[in-house]
Image (cartoon, rainbow, N blue to C red; front, side):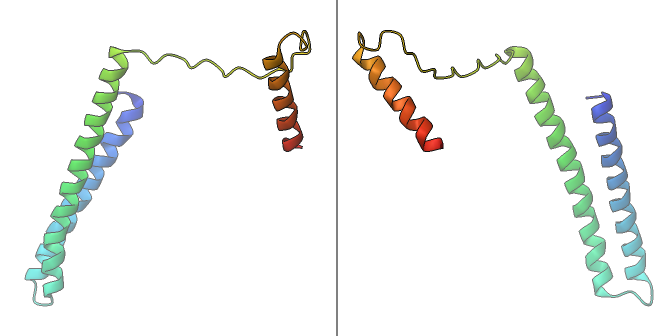
Length: 114
């Protein structure tokens, strides 16, 4: 959680939270001024919700990262094997009718791809 990759995420979360708190303070002061309106009062209530969302998103990212790390440590992910490539086999087609049918199917597929 304190790697280089995560350091910038922590900094961004702190900066966004500070901006939201400053916005709430500014709109509260503005709403109380003689030129303030109800719209400023509404914004003063809205900015703390933005700050709460930043905190929630930060905790959620941390939780998902911790869960992924725990799962990764529990069982390492196996590497998938590459899919086998179908190959036309010419040897002994007359001995094996299933092989001849398979080769006919592969030839038909090759014609379809064009």
